[in-house]
Amino acid sequence: MAALAFAYDAAPASRRPHDVIAVPGGQTGGRVLRKGPCARAKWLTASVDRDAATVIAAAFDQAEARDPAHWRCWVVLVDGDRHQIELAEAARRKVTIHLTVDLIHVIEYLWKAFWCLHAKDDPAVEDWVAEHALALLHGRCAEAAARIARQADDLGLATERRGGVEECVRYLATKEALPGLRAGPGAGLADRDRVVEAACRHLIADRFDITGSRWSVEGGEALLVLRAVIINRDFEEHWPHHIEQEHLRTRQARHQDGYALTD
Image (cartoon, rainbow, N blue to C red; front, side):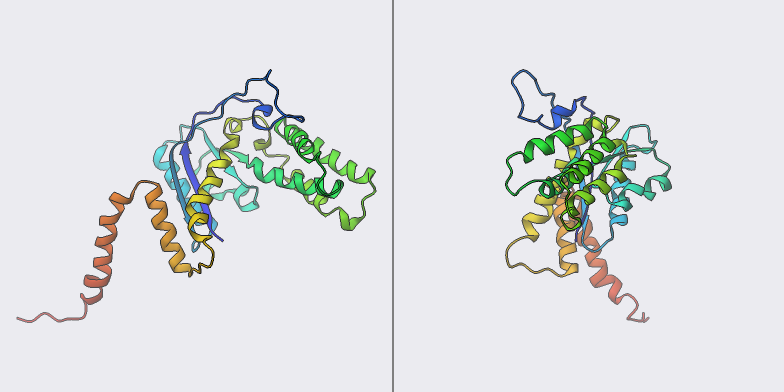
């Protein structure tokens, strides 16, 4: 599995929960939606060989190069994995971060819960998910989890049918303490998950998901590095350096100790 990290600059854009998620029944013409932030100076890295901690460290290197004195507000968007939330890298660098949970991943758990509670292809799914997602954005995480669990109890769901509900409730319980599910420093950046999702698509999927393709770890890593360099617009600087290093590796470094000097 590839690990991907992203760094970019963005000015927070003040928005309300219904600017991010459509209210049940859909948006009405009476509400003008506030626009989200615009990502600038985007930079990304990915790897199929290095572990996630190393990739995250590379993103912190990039962020520190942009703000070495840590004067700016650092917002870190994660998908909810424990190793991302703990983020030892931030503590090691002594930088204060504001953690935001990727709303798209949260909504995936809401969908799982809904299909445990309702019949297949129930048209009410979008409004149900929107209602609970809005509650999360308002900071009512515990309340949303309790309502979902209570609905399962009221329906008398058997244990084997409650898997999605229990998974959703556990996930929300572990995220209750995180400010990313409510208004906070990262609220204006909440939909920036689409920046990362787009990077997954055009950096990784567009090349590695070609039907019938097979990749070694070494080959895949080399291609990911090259694609990232091109996307980051660093190719013109990178390529002469690459040629120089290859020359040292294949010519000078290989033979420099293999011959003795003569008079």
